[in-house]
Length: 160
Image 1 (tube, rainbow, N blue to C red):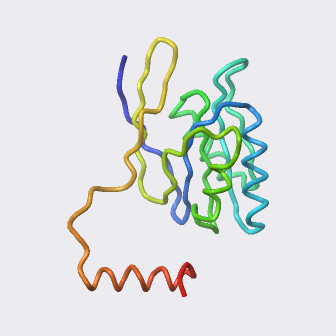
Image 2 (cartoon, one colour):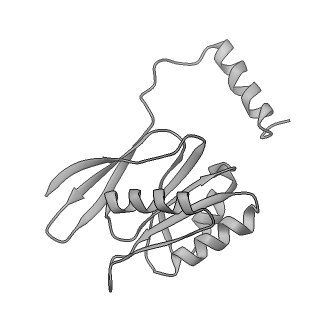
């Protein structure tokens, strides 16, 4: 077994959700979740099929984001993994619905941070072991940091 990491491409102003699923129907269900929650969100979804033709299935409503999701999926190349690359929305808007999707098994991350995917490769193929989402903490928040966090949440509309 070989361990390796892949750094994902996330365009400025975009987020991504990386997960594991189990059925080809996932791409259509994830598409419906995205457009059903937000008519403004622009996105691309790529799903790595793990059986049959073993193709990367791609859908979305933004050609560039579909291409970026596809590039990331090719680089990960782990069966039944999926990526959603999107803009004009936040992951929090979609996560509960995606978790409730019957085909979705796991969400590895939902972020705009730099992401490295840790992969194991065997003679059968590749699998996702986990992710490195962003950077390590540099300390513990103080009063000024708490106020800044609270102000941000109110500014973007998640708190009154």
